[in-house]
Length: 416
Image 1 (cartoon, rainbow, N blue to C red):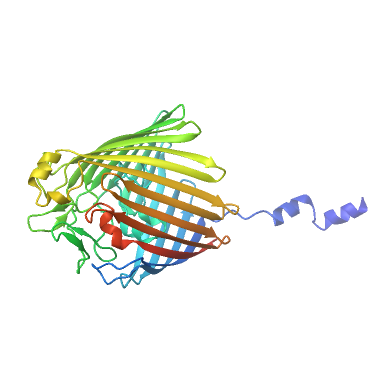
Image 2 (tube, one colour):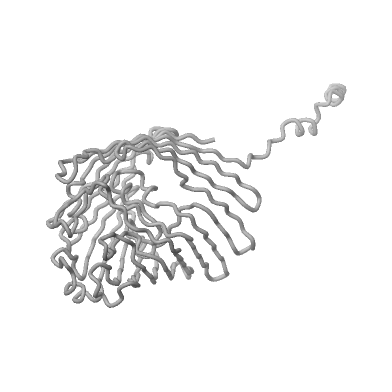
């Protein structure tokens, strides 16, 4: 008892221990970052350009988030030294404020990446900006989804959710301009890499995207709406300048478990606002697009997914009748089959991936093999290729045959 009293007199009681060793509250600041180097080059010569490298860059990212009780701020800034474009640029990939003014309403305002829909590398109702130059050059898949300055409101009711995304100023896809990859020009009748690069006219109007979603007995349903512009410059003005014609979109999707796998279907109607009768050869016709997909784990850590995609061009006869070069038009019914195989080995540190597109109507294909190895929590290395082939120089993938390339990347991650 005496010994106990002495300890107590010295102040080493339970309360004192608790007071000394209380855990500090977590910091509201979250810091992360990485540095990445990438290199890629064509697998053969391209007569349209002397550029053999398709990827030669060093990228650094700093991410800083502040998390409060009822709001948060997310920021991502990047510095990119791009040797292919001979340019160094600083960009803001994300800077958005999120908060909930009502219990069932979330708001996110600022620069952000927005995406929805259920297609795998096929985007029907997801008309938010994409970066196709990153996709074709071997950058991480994350960069396929480009950011935009938008306001997103999400309402969560008992039986459904509703999302609205308003982008005050239209932001197009980062499509091919000739700087990094060549493409087919119907006017020239061959593959070109123009210098100076293409610089289409961009509208200053806004875009509005909506989604209504619900879930019933494990089946996900969604309806979509879009009002804005074609995401790629498919219009040609009377002055010969490329531009982005008006576009409205309506669609829906469903996803459900079927026979140990996951089945999905999606459709979308593209209403080409500036040429609804399909008689203007310089503006794309309206289209109906549909997608069926199925994914299933075939063995332990081996997953396979297939998709069938159909694109129907409305008023096709009018388009062919008025087109300056009808021989270069795609088929009225464009079909596409995709296959994704993913195999994880070595405690899931090594990821083998193969994604292929094959079009029986265009008679062309695009194959994306890749291998990613996570060395440890800090280092990841990856290598892969973008391989195009086709019987027609003007088809969707066939025009990129000389853009086929192989790439390698190394990433060092830091987080606190």
